[in-house]
Image (cartoon, rainbow, N blue to C red; front, side):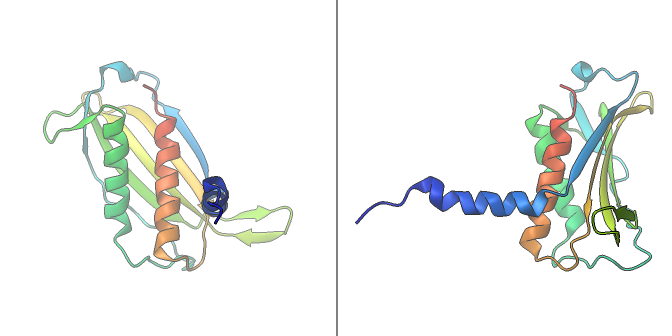
Length: 165
């Protein structure tokens, strides 16, 4: 019996993941006075997300998406060398989400609702913006929980990659 090539087995999974996240665009902005070489610690400021979805385009997944995002961000920040510290932290993190950012897709001439995840890091000493990352993507209707997790993980990972070191 011939052993299947692992690339042939894994490639469909990789392609499926990339197609699930291909619409997600990430941008970031560094605060003008930020010096990331001196940031060593962070904590969560107001980690409560604000969901703006007046037209009801989004349905909640079967898991706590806020807890999932916070855990993903914690892991990513710690991999970048930041330590979570409850008092006197260098940075305060907060996240926000929103849906209702509609745009016209010129190819289809259809209005497609967009969703966004915003991660903000504030210099705790000055209160100024240190860094902000934004991920936007098409609202997927009623995706399964694994798809939502994949999309959130991708968004967080791509945002954190844009953070200065």
